[in-house]
Image 1 (cartoon, rainbow, N blue to C red):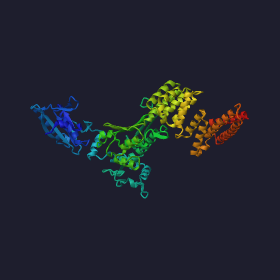
Image 2: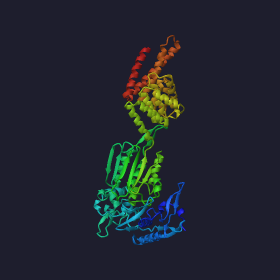
Image 3: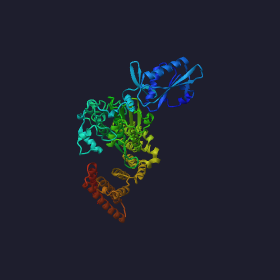
Length: 640
């Protein structure tokens, strides 16, 4: 005997509970839905006279209310009769009666087994197919009905059907040849018309591009051929369009900065959408790890797979377009048509699906063109690409009528947007607000390169070292974790925000420069490092840093900016020697050494400064080199 309480613990997709059978046709419709078995579960049961609920602890429970003998006989007879007379092809559900605690009442259980056929139910003047979707019995309409009929072998899959309105003249033969070449199947010894022959298959995975109508004998292209190679596919398949929208914010509150409605073949649409999204997959140079690492906003492969999935696996019988919407923090890709009946919804929402081909011919062409991964690998590829870039996983959504994929931007781009707002606040004089935002960001992530650097820039712009001093006081123990560029930016702020840095500022700057001394530095970082050393009067350290860098990178020896800086370092040494020469009562031997040092340092300064000009110094670098040469000339006159 069937245990109803055990049945309750099974997947509710296979059980329908009815306490009072108010409408016998409801029972028949549900039995038809179980027999049609769209989810491929094998069938299901309708339990009449049992109430589904929850116990005091929130667990599922069943109350066996039962039916009277008269009502049970009435329901049983009507359901069995209508399953025979009103269902086509007819079905014969098994029937079982189960006792309750009340001997005057019994539970009636109908069991319907999947048949592999598509069954319809006639209710009055209306005949319809019924299926189970999300634990409910629903009428199969549009794409759901087509999927049911196709899955039961009663209808040729949509992509393989002949298009009743198109002819071979509506195909772009140049586009066809180009695609066949890219797929590696083009045979130059055969005319292009060869591939339009209804007897010629491009592959075992797809039927011939064209077929012959049984009655008229007219050769017509199949739907997949119209989508791939049609001159104007939308004339014959109105839903074969895509839309792209770009919003600068995180929702639709702001007006779009770009909107496009794309037509043409789906190969053309795919490339157009991918090109537009590739602009969003921008790389950002990040130095927070001490090097120069490129972080993408969206992995290109993930964007491409999501777009191709939407185009290939959509329902083309609906006029709705594929919609791609790029926001500041995500990309939403919406595809019309529910999930293929063979796809488990829960697994799909997790991004874990077994290989299933809808529109098989389309999928095969995209795979051969290397625009998509092999069968069933699209969703795993999306998730793997995001994971490899350190991005959150994609989110998937599915309803009866649509499927959506949401690709989140890399988390660092949210911070970039915050920093752009800080820069805007600074430009408009909202300094207090900018500093408040920066300090909040640093409280969350104190070693983010961009945030630390922007704090230093704001301090310099307002000529106030207090924000930098507060940061260094809170995080002094972790200064070595900062990349060299951030350490140098902080040192810059300490030494240049005020005309005369205080001792505490100079000491902290020296500490930062010590950390930055052995770190990897590009030309910009090296120049900043040397400038800070010169501000601290650490002339010898500046010269050694320049010499070490040029020894490691010989090409830097001709860089005008570094030549100007090295010339200034020699100039500062010459100035120090000149000041020694002006000291009263200096012993002769020391005076002669100072004079020799002055001449050597001054000559070295002149060589480097003139070399900077000769190597094409422009702008500020040229101005500095010329000013330093002028100062050197005056210094020599004083020392004579």
